Amino acid sequence: MTHGLASLFGRQTARIAPLSWMALAVMGLSLTGCRAIDEAGAPQVAGWAMVDNSQRHPIIVSQQPQTMEIRVAAASRGLSPRQRAEVMEFADRSRASDAGNSRIVIQAPGGSANETASMHAVGEVRQILSDIGFAASSIAVEAYHAPDGRSAPVRISYLRYVAEAPVCGYWPTNLAEQRDNANYPNFGCANQHNLAVMVANPGDLLGPRTESDRAGERRDVTWNKYVKGESTASQKSEDERVKIAK
Image (tube, rainbow, N blue to C red; front, side, top):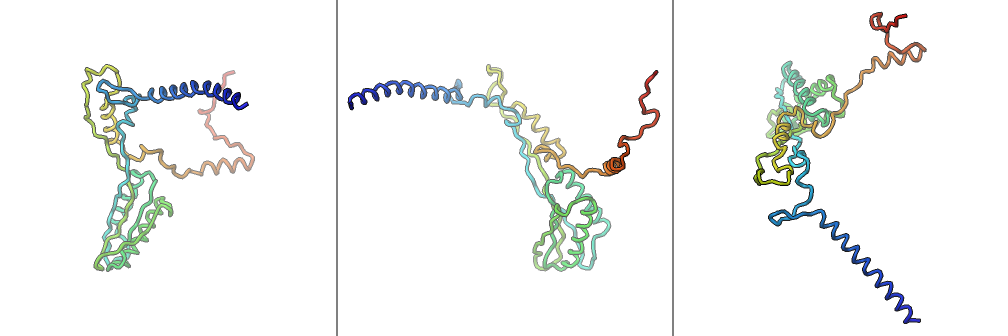
């Protein structure tokens, strides 16, 4: 009985062994198929030379702080007309270059000679930002220590997007001797460089902008007509109506 089982297991092992070796061979071929050897003998990943130029020459988009300082006298009770205009202009620039994706930070000096006047200025800055459409959640107020108790400015800052263009001019091979008709390393770099330099808002390279508030006047008119059972269609003049000849 024992001899019979040993013979049975021996035959099953003999059948399984060729299948195992065949599976290993197929796995080895699948792994080696992803790599190729160039003329110099260096391994290269297949398809890497054909990658898109936006991946070969990426545009690095980062955020950098943009800061504005407001000098506030100790005896003042708020901002001057010129300072109000400068705050509004700074806020408009933040919208144009930031697309509403970060907050505006107002920093007030603490322990300075103009601390009380600075707090009045900070309150007026917040009011200006609120009047021109900035939500309360997009405005932050912080305090910073003024050195030696001297008068210190009120700082307004936000993070703006900056695009860093790729460096072009890498020509490792002679294109006259390139027989594979693949994209050369410097291909598309000039387009990426020019795009990074010319883009008005680098934040657009990361994704779409945030939507602004809708205008609800027309929706309210249409809804009121619907509630009253009236027609919600727009009125048209005689020139705009379709005339059918009889």
